[in-house]
Length: 183
Image 1 (cartoon, rainbow, N blue to C red):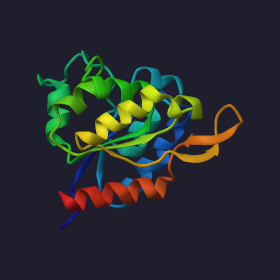
Image 2: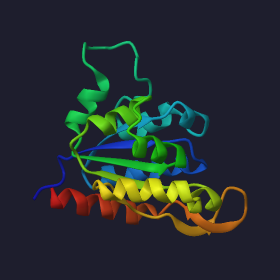
Image 3: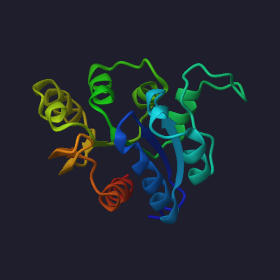
């Protein structure tokens, strides 16, 4: 199966690891994928839409009720074109929203509207990751078919070492390729 014409929606949430989205986009593009970015409003505090647009060569979406260029419902049209939704980095917040079926922003609404597989790459403080509620949310999402990669043990934003470090970019890209081959 040819993977080069596949469309990946990359969801970027508000983690210090948001800068890794640049490497993810570059690697996915080198593999021949089309990449469209949806970032949460809070993610803009860590990386700019302009940077991600320049790397993806596509408009970056973030607001659920933005002024339409064409009359389309963005969270539906983005969901419809997705062959895969990859959320990297995924915070405890976006994982909780998805586990609760909450669609209060463009990214969570798009995921809820999509038929495409969803791959989640968590990145957060180790206490947040290990928290019982976060673990229950991850288990709930896995039970409905969402896939996860990572997190890894590594140096975190607070300088401590623990589980919560974003998985390696090459591992994330490889897992995305595997999921697309299965489709």
